[in-house]
Image 1: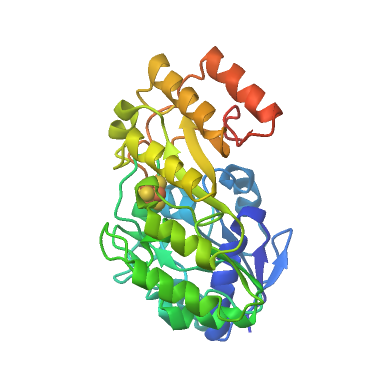
Image 2: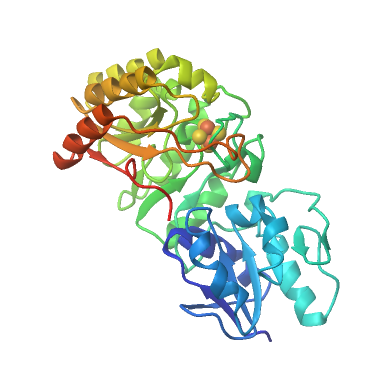
Length: 365
Ligand code: SF4
């Protein structure tokens, strides 16, 4: 039996939970480690933290396997660093690769090595794998996103068709957790096959999960945010009825219609203000994501985002980021734009007042 280790990386805990349960099902388990070792050490890398681990992987005294969003986007560069690079989803491919290593068989599709790469031919059927077992994580209800925001890795990583875990498969996680938090590109798209919300499916999910009153479901908030145009009376009534807490977290990204169009967000500034109005009406606190320094953003575009931030904090909080060009996205070759002095000043004072959080003034490591 292979001695398998999983390199502990805080941001990748959910990947650990999901892949551990998939491997467990195939008869493989691994222990967590802070240094590479054993027969084989596994890494899940995102594009922000990946640079900190590349030397370690290259010099590891064991077989190394890497996966995650960064490995998927940059596999052709990483085959010089790791022995095996999993491209795309790991639940199906990783157990096959471990079996190939154990039996000295050919590398399966979906794994890149120095010798080449054959893409996987299928995507993962979520119901075939538990979200997690004893190694707990968040409950992933949906993968894939039909939108094409220029800065986002999700569509290239998981595809543009949404795949939802069934209510019954999600309910299996209930035995492991009390607080239910959901991973999804857009919680209010649960059950939908296009861009139309399916409230009856959301209600069935929430009703089932909260039937045991000891469980707390946090729907529409971290880590599974929503899009502003999905915030409707019906959606907020469901959240008030079934979800714990009084917050909703949505991505607005910019206060400029010109920028929203340029990044292909698929909603307008007026959708954002409508969502804020509804939150006020239903006494729900909005937490709103904004991005500054987006490609093509002028000083006047950024001023509109600052104005939006000032409006948001009257009833909620802002989570602001500096745009970072991530590999595998349409904006991968762009550079982070300028943060204008007025933005620094306003965001700085909102941060001091604890109304704004996020890495808006920090470049990637
Ligand atoms: S930012 Fe959200 S809505 Fe846009 S492509 Fe990514 S996951 Fe989809």
